[in-house]
Amino acid sequence: MSEEYDYGEYYYTSEELPSHYYMFYYCIIPSFQQANGFVLPVIIACFLFRSITQTYYYAENIKHFISAATGLVVLFYVFESLSFHIFKLIIGLSILFYLFNILYRKTRGPIISIICFIILVLTELSSDNEQWPRIRGVEMLIVMKIISLAFDLDSGIVKEFPNMTSYFGYILCPGNVVFGPWVSFNVYRKIFVNPLWNSKWLQEIVISIIKTLIVFTISACCIDSIFFSMNNSQTKWVSMYQNALQYRTSHYFISFLSEATSLLAGFGSQSDGSWKISVAQLQYIELPRSLVQVVVSWNLSMHQWLKQYIFNSSRSLGGFLSVTLTYIVSSFLHGLNYRLAGVLMSLGFYTYIEYTLRAKLSSKFNACIAARPCPLHCNHRFTKTSLAVKIFNAVCSILTIFHLAYLGCLMNTNEIEATTFSLAFKKWVDLSFISHWIAFLTYVLYIISKLTM
Image 1 (cartoon, rainbow, N blue to C red):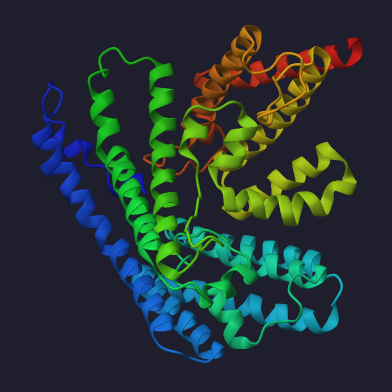
Image 2: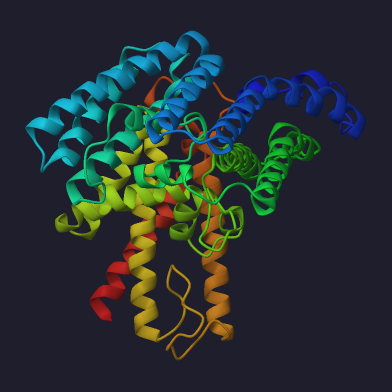
């Protein structure tokens, strides 16, 4: 997102910090105008889809057909000629899915997963390097939906293979076909059931849109403006944090936008009549207790998908191998990208070390210092109100923020995609791989604690 809205070169022409006037007219306004070109049509399509399927009574197959047709229109409008690459992937995977559903009815999940990843990799290798990143997210969502449906059929969560209209309605649902988030097939089917829209539904949509506008403004303009005054004295550490923050706010923009489009399409209804969808939990990322909490809060639907279909399916391999496999799958889903793979694999090792060490220390000292927060009423001798516990958790939070900035600085999308290994990790080289050294020392501490406690 950020590389499309980088107006810093245009309006940062003086040595002074740009005024709010210039920021508003030469960054915020142009950024919103450009974003509206693809955001507004998706929002309108989701609202029309919800209106048509809820205002009149239609047979269920007709509703699924409307979902698929609306999704096709959205894809074609947003991606234009690139949408044909998406259509080819959908058709190819769907044909293979139908065939293997007949041939291997008990092992559809693992087989379809392997096929999806192979085709996803081959598709990327045969695609234009400049165009592929535009459709990578959409193709990832399609693969996630197909794999989850295959595993749900194996487990019996979905009783029978869906017919063609419900299948394509699920894959192409306009509420999440572009921005996400992933939802299961059964969750998709519930959007055609009551309750109808109400004031709480509208309220949640407005809140999501406001959050989207705020983080978009921060990502597109405010961060550059804030750090502009530091240009003369900016250290590599400040630059590291700026790059990571830029990437995180771009992620929040997509996450909150996906909440809005999903709500508009009918997702998020609760049993008490309220509406709620949470994709990213910003507060637990910017002020984290641990990296484990960051990984979970970064993308709740992605975390649920990886945990349910990859981690739980591979637990027989052991904790370390199942965690490693989960991050490898996540890397493949996000594409063949040196930097992203490096970040995700580093996160895998970091979180495993952190989780096991803090669990060990929590058990040894009978204190609320594990990677995950304790329940409101726990049986630890030293609870979260203890001064020592507060200090320990605060130190862990600061260390997590540092790790997050170090890992995230590599993902600044303002930069041209690195094509070689050395260029991809240049920022980490410049920082002497300090975060990895800290993680290594943490692992040594874990080994010592394991041998002595």
